[in-house]
Length: 142
Image (spheres, rainbow, N blue to C red):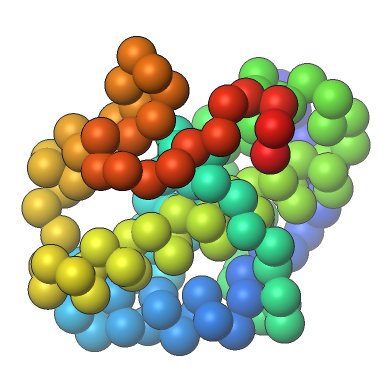
């Protein structure tokens, strides 16, 4: 079994993402910060959307975030070149930033989130882009 992200202890996201996550909780889109981070990471990975973490804020503990090493395993498969735990954690944080941004935008546009519709709209098509019109670059160009 993997040592979580090579022993890295803390997870960070941006001040902007913290504000967005708090708004998502207030609007009852998600119940807890950890849910927003995990959903954001999943959306970011699915749609290949990464965003740099600017003005980092301590989100929490890596052990509570990825209890079964699922997220790290996905990062390892998607990015075999990420040889260190720190590199994998940085990638995860960037994917979460991108996904939180998408989720927040969806909540603002629609006033709520219909999860099934969101997933269907954002699911990559055979062309490699999302049905919602989100521009997803081909693998390797990010």
